[in-house]
Length: 155
Image (tube, rainbow, N blue to C red; front, side):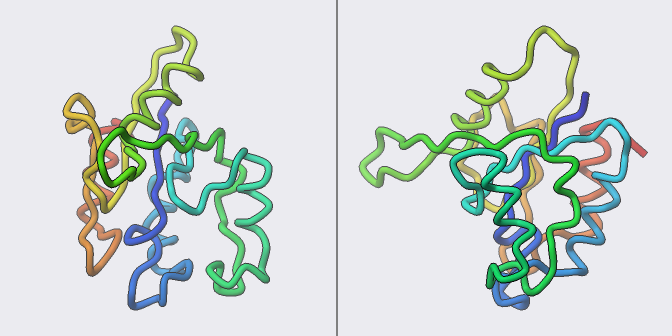
């Protein structure tokens, strides 16, 4: 089982795409998620309170951020991380803690690999080997896809 924690903003949406789904970035993402054993967990601020509402939002062509298109990989989504707040002054959510919690609550002794694709670096030190940090200006790039494939050990 290969789990892919996906952020949207500055990964598959960029300033250039006006923070809407970018078809070019989605095609790059396809190189990862088209693998049979790769599944997506949404860790993005785009997520809703549960998987059903998240998918509903991602296939809603009226959603202004979907840019008139549906997120093409909804069949690969197996979960969404829960929002938790840090105990820091900023009360910013800590993505790494949310991911750790999702793995703890959803993986039952099954062997797995995981990768985190995000522009923010609010992850835990133990997650660094599994983290691909996208460029704040460009979003997902070919070299990011290659790093993800290495981490997940896919072709």
